[in-house]
Image 1 (cartoon, rainbow over the protein chains, first blue to last red):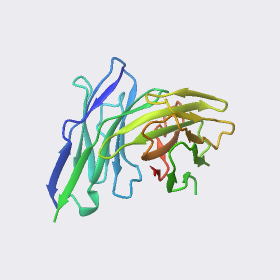
Image 2 (image 1 turned 60 degrees about the vertical axis):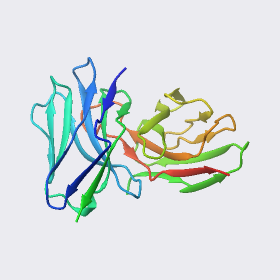
Image 3 (image 1 turned 120 degrees about the horizontal axis):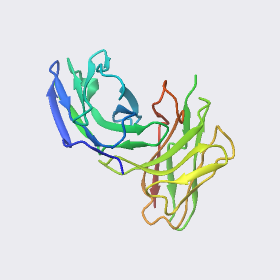
Image 4 (image 1 turned 90 degrees about the vertical axis):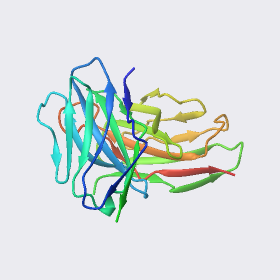
Length: 113
Length: 115
């Protein structure tokens, strides 16, 4: 079975600084998708960024970028210039082509003013 | 605007009663999912449906039931057999397969409390 691991239950970062959240996954497949979702206190799940496994180039969305290491099965999220509104739970997720989503346990990010 | 609507936002149920959570989407997505989230934890899959009139159990289906009579709707019933139903429930939808737009879109959730 596919699994997703987020080894950091909680992280904190100073406002305007950079933080990296870790994610590893376990799969024997070669075609899949990876995602980072943000869940703020409102509990609405918001897509932050996605990465297709067949793409070597790391995805970037404004202040959010990923470091995708396919051989190591690692998919970390880097948040640059952290803002107070970035405080949330962050979930890493994996999806095999055409199959269900598998979510990690989440990392709670605090942003300190 | 397209999206997923869950209702109600808060729901209270007495022990021994069944209760149904609503989930409607107008994104024309084939696949729909129900997840349970307990405090400080991740999402656990209850049921999923890849197409109308078909659905499969997820990891924690015991005590729950679903139906998928329409593409737009995927209601979840929490039965009295569910021993610990107090939780936050999230409904999601997605395109089942394809290259573009493969992410899950979520509703705003329903907080169920057993009293």
